[in-house]
Amino acid sequence: MGHWRISLQTAHNYITMDLQSVLENGNASVTIQITAKDLKEFADYLLTIATRQAHEMQVAADGESYYTKAEVLALFNICPTTLWHWGNAHFLQPVKVGRKVLYRKKDVQRILKTREDRV
Image 1 (spheres, rainbow, N blue to C red):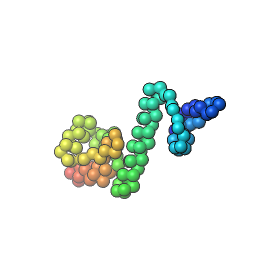
Image 2: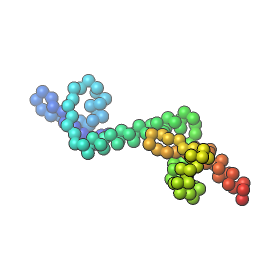
Image 3: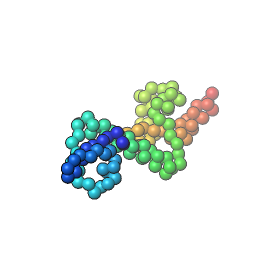
């Protein structure tokens, strides 16, 4: 978060510090002027961190690991529509973590094993 630097006006001059320091301080009464582009970038950064932390907590909570949508598509050599149909049919249920769609490795491995047993 260090690349979002802001200038703060003190009694007689401006000081520059990174936004994280201001947020950690918590006591400062600060007025921030920011462009819409920078605000969106900062919001996207926060969402990325929150999503990553939520995913890490989910994995830690249930001890499971996951495949991404792209990995599942490649493993089965299927199109996104087929994967969507599998979810609707409860054949392979997705797990949503933030905005990410993930698939439990144990579920994917079960389906792969079933396919191998048929051959």
